[in-house]
Image (cartoon, rainbow, N blue to C red; front, top):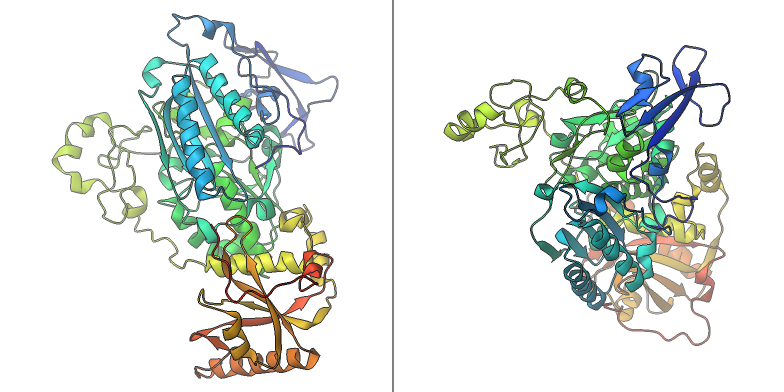
Amino acid sequence: VSCHNHHQLSTINYQPIIIMSHNNNDDGRQKHNDHGANNDHCVFDHATNNTSNCNDNSDNERGVIIPENAKAVCHRDLPPIDPIHLQEQSVHSGSILLFYQYIEPLWTKEQHKRALKKVIEIGLQYNITGRGRVAQEGLNCTLTGRPGDIRSFCTSLREWDEIFLETDFKITDGVEWSKMFKSLSIRKANELVAYGLAGDKAPSLKKFAGTHLEADEYHKAMQDPETVIIDVRNAYESAIGSFKPPEGGAKLIDPKMRNSIEFPKWLNSKETQEELNGKKVLMYCTGGIRCERATALLNQMSAVNEDLKPKGVYHCRGGIERYVKTFPAGGFWKGKNYLFDKRMEQTPDVVDVNAVERDIDSKCCLCRTKWTSYRGQFKCNRSLCRVPVIVCDSCAVGAALDHPQKLVCELCRDGYKAPSEMPDLVAMKRKADNIILNDGDSRSVKGKIHEDGNERESLRKKPKSFYHDRLFLRRLPLTASFTKIKSALGDDRVKAVEWLTDRGSGGFYGSCIVQLMDKSSVKQILERNASSSNELKRGCERGIRIDRQRIKVSEVFVKVCDDEKLFQSGFRQKEFPPVGS
């Protein structure tokens, strides 16, 4: 996922002075102003942990910002080490690194194997500890080590493969040694985030990924009343902290997910789509990785669904982790950021502990006392749930051990049932890819989704013309062949077949373009297909079929694209579709 569209500065985690400018809107609400003159200023001094020249309003202090921390480090130097963390004997000399990098097209199986070996090799070279997942679609890691070693690890990845110049390495120095991992565990995986979107189900990030907003841009976007914000984390994470947009600003939506695999089902529900249609959509998660596929899935879904047309899909680059570093007094963030490392949680640097606690409404699942931390690895007792639950210190040594059957999460306590209908992800992807193929726009759907949505709408209404001798076939069985297609459509009508393959693996995914003898052949097959569709609606089991599987037939749009090269001189007909890697 590239960062090249922004002019970034290096992320500096330790700045002595922070300045925020603000003035008032006509309605009296605070308005941030980075460039205006004669404004009040809110200044934060790290040396004293105090703000000065601020009004007494605590909301103003929450707007304190470190602009440099909003910027990703892709294609930039890594952040320098603060001198205090260079001291060999310092108890705060450890660092933690969060990063991910999607690969598109996918690594081949051999490349995947080499990547796994290389990451482990570099990690061992620099005494790195932590855990990570390496899949054909990329890399996702949470690692710890000394500040210099962490940076050497990042530099070595960049030197090994230039794709990691695009990576937003998020480094936090000053981590206590007790919060560091003890060993390195990098394992092979099928998917970086368990959405159930691996392989041919995964929406293309190059074609459909949402637009990155830096933390300060995301902050401003949350003030737009025509915007909805989706927390794509699990419900147990959201329970102890979330964004709270300002009054009159965006609307926050909690999908109430027990796990990420529920997200496609939630997005597929009619109620969700009604909330998102016609709105700008912001998404956020812990560090950004879950939003990559989530925004791409929404954009892909909107490409094929006339009732789902958001006015742009965006997400916060670097997630909550980068936002709270950019807004050390909290900004619009309230509570704790649930973490999957030994720190357990993250809070804004200069927010009083009591203030953080006041922002959280979570309770012990047993005694119902207000409690805001997950400790002890207790989980919901319901067999189909098993998500983490909050247990207070008192219950942790008593009721939780004596009556584990009473451990029930908030969703199960409320009897909440998540949407159950999973969209046909493979068919959706093929249809969306075909729309792009027919539109002939290499910038993809995400390049057409502008803030006002007008460009994509005008593109959709643009008149189309069709090839007079071609048809597009999809939902073909993997056993399809040139001979079987000729038999299904008519031996005297089919001239040639071009098998369509996945750009990453080179494998056949169930679609092809058929060249026919003449215009009348196209017309006759389309009429037969339409007649078959009507018969199916009446309960008949006919249709154009190959190996008993009914296939879909449609016309092929004329476009300025690579399909002009199809069936040119030198074309050699293949009897069977390619298998791929």
